[in-house]
Amino acid sequence: MEERKDELQTKGKEKKIKYSIIVPTYNERLNIALIIYLIFKHLRDVEFEVIVVDDGSPDGTQDIVKQLQQVYGEDRILLRARPRKLGLGTAYYHGLKHATGDFVVIMDADLSHHPKYLPSFIRKQKETGANIVTGTRYVKNGGVHGWNLMRKLTSRGANVLAQTLLWPGVSDLTGSFRLYERSVLEDLVTSCVSKGYVFQMEMIVRATRKGYHVEEVPITFVDRVFGSSKLGGSEIVEYLKGLVYLLFTT
Amino acid sequence: MKHIFKITSVLAAISAIWIGLLQTSLLPPNYTWLLPIYLVVALGCYGLFMVGIGLMFFPTCPQEAVLLQQDIVEAKEFLSKNGVDVASD
Ligand SMILES: Nc1nc2c(ncn2[C@@H]2O[C@H](COP(=O)(O)OP(=O)(O)OP(=O)(O)O)[C@@H](O)[C@H]2O)c(=O)[nH]1
Ligand SMILES: [Mg+2]
Image (tube, rainbow over all chains, first blue to last red; front, side, top):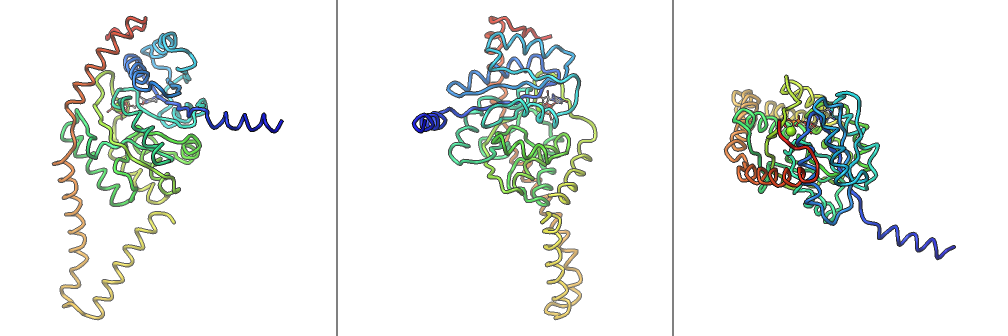
């Protein structure tokens, strides 16, 4: 009996770390196929699953995901759909419920987040033992392509404001390409209530306040090529409201 | 401690120093009275300066867009061979 138990334990230790990659989609028919191809291309010797959380996209995103399951296997690509567009924050939560990995990666489906950076997230986490690794665009080797001056200006302004007021300890607050320890993400997701960009900011600010170890890796961000943006309207006002909200609650 | 308290305490500390300066009149009082205004102006300048710097040295990556296009071509080729419908509409 004793021996058996030991054997089981060592087996447990040798078990490979598993990653769950959560990709929320809404009308990303073409992008989801491309990104899944690229994920499988760049994560060769890693145990992982992709969890697609689709909110009933009318463009047939789910049909494509089913075709992809035929190619890559239903155990590697999980389709966890919801009946209608219920928003990004809850999409992560929904995906997380079905995740079986030790670590969870969250990325957009629109190819702004390139899967070729996944290995550097994983490496960084292994090297530092961080609870969270977040992709940052505003450092050496990082960058953005396809933004006009106005978009750059708001992005820089928003960042300076947040850095001055919140002292968050990370350089890119609104980026959403991140790797989390699963238990950490479970903890954060339940304590974050914001929507849109503010949600990403709230997650990382609460994480630093809670004392989680956060590391950064440079990523490049190419503005979406296919499909259309789903976040719109009065983003700046929402952002400012979010900033005040975080000032008072974190 | 909520973050707003941290900021409030920093502001309180600054005000305390200012009041101290006013009462001890280490500096000419006229000058001391204007200090908060200087401070606000300085903060504003700092903000504008940082945004300006950020804009000037905004990291861009045009080569990444080219690489992505190549990846897209490669992915489409593989996927259409394997029965995934990637015909753009
Ligand atoms: N499941 C789900 N996914 C969503 C929803 N809204 C957006 N998404 C997905 O979330 C990711 C990010 O959304 P985007 O529309 O690209 O938002 P953005 O990156 O801020 O805006 P862009 O500048 O257009 O790229 C994409 O993969 C979307 O398909 C939603 O309500 N439900
Ligand atoms: Mg996007």
